[in-house]
Amino acid sequence: MLERLLGLLRAGGAYRVGDLARALGTTPELVEAMLDSLQRLGYLKTVGHACAEPCTSCPLARACGPNASARLWTLSNPPDQKLNDSTPG
Image (cartoon, rainbow, N blue to C red):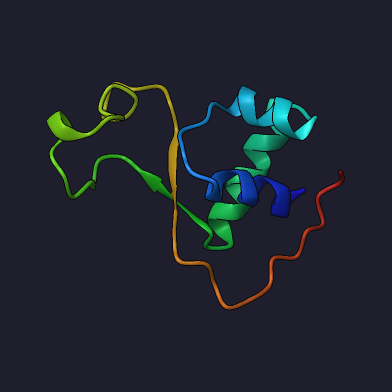
């Protein structure tokens, strides 16, 4: 299921955890855990206070920053290792 999630993310766009859960036929909690796993494995990185571009030109400006409740990720260069999908699904 990690490969399926990564495929959705690679297709581009912005997604809510609930939307990803519905697309994968699972729970938002499992999607959160998978996103955390992908981050630990180096496939995703968090976005937030260290952005290179000014917030005024960013389409996600309202979702991130010190007062936002959303967690944001972006794809990073995938590691050389193959993704080991041990997630049920």
